[in-house]
Length: 177
Image 1 (cartoon, rainbow, N blue to C red):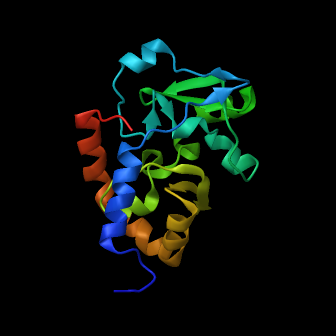
Image 2 (cartoon, rainbow, N blue to C red):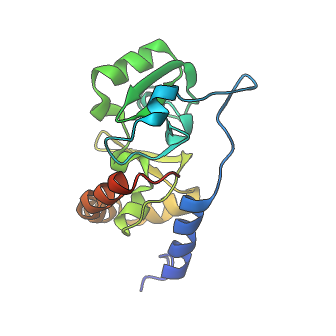
């Protein structure tokens, strides 16, 4: 075993933390931003990392491409896609996403890319990200991202193999994260 890789027990801890832990509400100028009630009732049509109906912790996915950093989205620029609400920093980002969601949405439904490569659906933090070959990948933490960066092509290949099964199981079980 590569000594730099996380032991399986550590990955199990990450999986448990990522799935079970609660996270602070998404805020906007002191208010709680909530998903459109209609979207909360609708089951996601794909496996998307969402909390309280908000995808990827309310981070604007387009900003990773246009600004090179995570930017918190706001409810004023919300867009419903795949059964969840995606938030954007401005109308231009929302409209770019709406015109081609697959170009901007993170891979593996916004779940941790390393976790998916290991066969698990794991939560993410918006600050652990990378764009590889024009695609957005998110990770559980900076430490996990560092591990993922040791073999990005290998982990992407593994994740591409495990994702269809994980996505199918998640969509069928309608789990909340």
